[in-house]
Image (tube, rainbow, N blue to C red; front, side, top):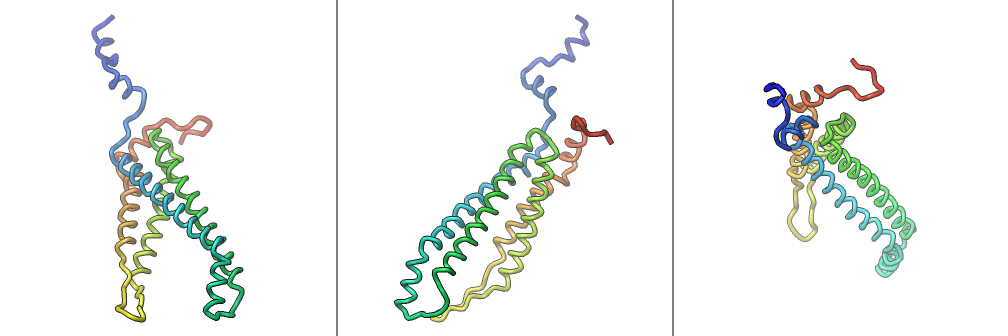
Length: 194
C-alpha cells in the first residue's frame, strides 16, 4: 500500500461514521429539538382538550339536572353539551394530528431529507401565526369579576410561542449551515437534477 492510501482511510469508528453520513449542523439540531419539544407539549395539550371534550359529553345529563334545579328553562341544554363536547373533541383530534406530524418531522430530520424539513418549517410558520394571534388577543382581554378586581390577559405566552417558532424557523430554514447541509445532498432518486 502507498502512504497516501493509508492517510485517506478512516482510522477510527467516528471518522468512518462521518464519511458515511453528512454532519448535522448545530442550528438544525436546535430547530429539531425545539420542534420535538413543542410538538410533545401540543400532544399533551391535545390529550387535555380531549379530556375536557369527553367531560362535556359525559356531563350532559348532570348539567341539565343542575340547570333545572336552579330554574333554567331555556334551550335544550343536553344537546348543547353534546355539541360542545363533540366540537372540543374534534379540535383535540386536529391538535393531536398536527402534533404527531411535528414529532415525525423532528424525528425524521436527522436523515437530512427535505420532506421533514419543509414540514417543520410549515408547522413553525403556523405556530408563529398562532403566537401572534395569541399575543395580540390576550393583550386586549380583560376579565371583570363581579365581587373583586379585574384581571388583564398577558401576552407573555404568545410571545414565548413566537420566540420558539422563530428559533425553529431559523434553525430549519434560514441558518446558513443548515441550507449548506441540505444543498450538499445528492438529488433524490427519480427526480431530475436541477
